Image 1 (cartoon, rainbow, N blue to C red):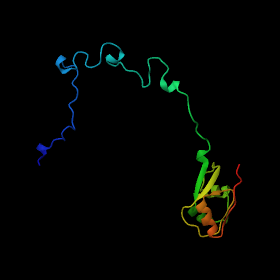
Image 2: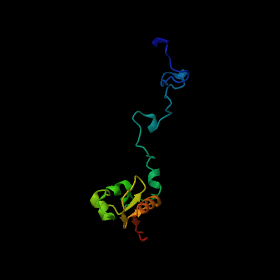
Image 3: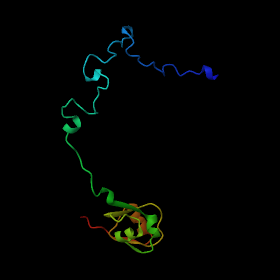
Image 4: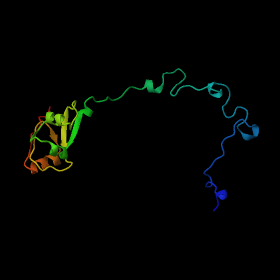
Length: 148
């Protein structure tokens, strides 16, 4: 194989339409644009979604759903992060001071990620089933959060 013999695969390249090249081409005279009107003219296009002055679709349809203001303020904390804490009793304030959760967090939940080797008492912080089992396995406790 030489560089001068390389060709693209059969059917992978198409000749571009050569518009406005005479009647015989099938795209002569109006060059496939039809007769008159805005779309037949050079520069005759309008913004996306414009429907000729009619109320556009994206404005006719009702708005749906909402964006929760608290969704991003529920934080997950790993067991391995609890391991680094110098205190034995952990609540949301302790986690904020340690920098494990942002200052504007509304709630936190401990997830089973990493290992825990010391006794910890959770108060006012949620825990998954696995994390709760791991905390209780080393002698710690998880205080249930009252459902609001």
